[in-house]
Image (cartoon, rainbow, N blue to C red; front, side):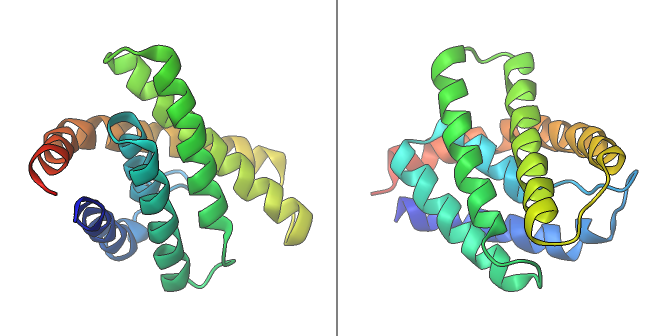
Length: 163
């Protein structure tokens, strides 16, 4: 039941991302609420819940968009793994450590997306890569720092009070 509730929150963020923020375009980038959510899950939830939720949400997200199927799965699972490593190393609940995790998640996402495009699909210039990385990092760090205080009590409540 816990995993279902956590996945339901992720599905709500996917709907918000695809309906509202998909129309925002700030310096060529959009905030990635699903990536931010996976990073937040990595900070506060156990490994099993993280990986199951990330896989399910990535499959749903890839099914809803008409992009390359499986890229979100690779990005979100890799991001979950790296964020869990950072959480184990940092042990701190400071704003800079959260911002570092959101930046790291964005860096992994952007690197994997551009690398896969360079190898299998249409190559993109490196200047575009750095522009998108910078803009997307700022947007994701901002979204993450706003969503973290809202989602942390929800995760605590779900993990303590639900079976």
